[in-house]
Length: 237
Length: 229
Image (tube, rainbow over all chains, first blue to last red; front, side, top):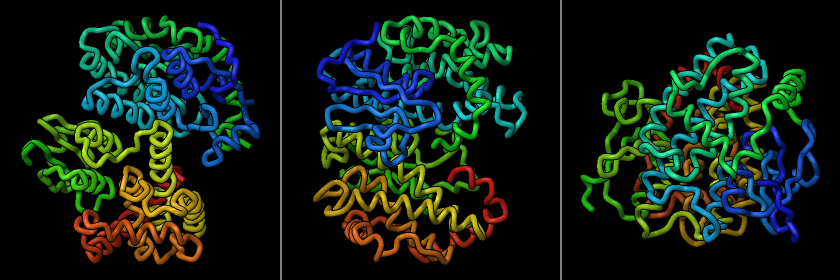
């Protein structure tokens, strides 16, 4: 699915192609077939538009819908689910308990699982890389179990359609693959995490996803640049 | 729905588990309160929340729901009376954003300010006060964040009205200066005077004693917390 021309400029997304958080918003917009202008931010610098539309934490992604600015990736995804409820399939599960499960796993992924992966990508020396990889692997075991329970034999966490948890977790897959290549390790594999391995293939091939996940070689080059500029990542201007 | 259907695993001094109670009480949902010793975790807690081993846990019809904000949304979606989140998608996004903001910026910063020493206290206080300044703009001209009635954001931020003054006392510091932040102080009074809220607050003296003890225990290793600023 290629970028659609946003003829009246009603929907804009401020972001950057490598960011998993931005990818989340793009997948959600694609699921709902929303046309939008994608406005790329320059790495290490914050544009006037970003500072104006998200003055509180000055971070991408920011969704601009008319005069409304929405920030924080999963808050944006929920907004898209609610604001375009009559267009395309739902993103959140319909039952409150299933939503609670999806939201729980998202907080786990963001607060516990992603930080060691991020630390590996940035080359931070907070602890030995083996320990960080072990944490990532332990998390994947939990997520494999969660996938098997939640998908109930269907293709995605969301069942037959990709949903909130597919988007939240799947947005990290390109970075996960990048770490596998640069560190020479296997993290998701059909022998250790068969459910996730199958899910990953289907997710990455999905129409709403395939054009927004960055190519791995591009991401590897980008990660080298990130490591050389870690202080800009931690303290952007 | 009888009280046996809804249970909440709580810790009396936790700002997280009290949110769940406030939400249930506002909606008039009966529940069984199960006190947890978070320093000596029960088999029940470890069974219901094996990954994080934390309170609160809401158990509804034998199914556990974890993470306080996730629980609040579950409560709002399950029991429709006295809606907590607004109807409009943008307003909902606004409330969720500010709940996260206060959690990530103010909650850590105010606790760290209480347990840190020297320059680090100042650093934490600055982050805390900057966060309060931003929240002040959101409550200006309103009785509650939810408008005339208490809503999701009041419950999510309610801890500010009761826990921060305790932290201020224990840490001999000031964050919520009434001259600098009149709107938030007015909201705190309104919130704490709400019949449902004031009926469900932990005893102040016990809170002060508890956090004095926490400060003594945590202070030697507070540097580990600085990364959350």
